[in-house]
Image (cartoon, rainbow, N blue to C red; front, side):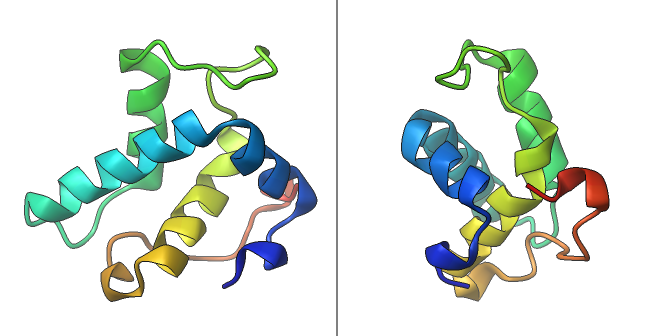
Length: 97
């Protein structure tokens, strides 16, 4: 999946919040390096939300739940050898950006 196939709001999120993407990627890599071959993108987002001082640039949220499925898809797009790390399903209506 190329980046231009993502919803515009997620593309904007990535552009404005590289610090959040970098942290998500770092935590996903840690899970993989620990030998986990199945993990939860929601767990990573919750960790970022509760255990770090990071916020979205707009300041309204630490990190919106609506970005969670797109973060995992982006990670897999950049790391196709790690496709098993996140289960990819249909996007729920509430997460359609």
